[in-house]
Length: 166
Image (tube, rainbow, N blue to C red; front, side, top):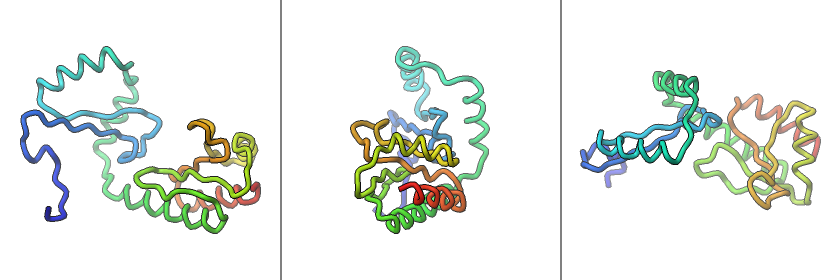
């Protein structure tokens, strides 16, 4: 390998399938929409499967996704990494335990002393900060998820509010 990334599509394989979501590349996490690139035959077969297995994405969301394809998302990964780096720095200062994200747009953290993050999330909402309590992801009541989907200034302000509540 020469270190360059090559799409599977560049090899013109007959049965290549590429799937992609708009969640990270276009910051459309709540939309739950993506796309598939392949041969006409494969797409027709998978469309039948999709019709049997999944509900449709609403038409307005489909149009929004199509419009977003015109956007320049070149810097989105860099921007997200900068936001995550800032969150990591603040979490370390706050002595929160977390695993460094690898491809995620959030930090899943917990305090060194046990807290009820469902109660914390309710309290923070009263102060304009939304976190996701860990219980929503399984048996992780002491954890909470901090999303990096806002600008750094807003993230810092939110983390300052969280600091006052821990």
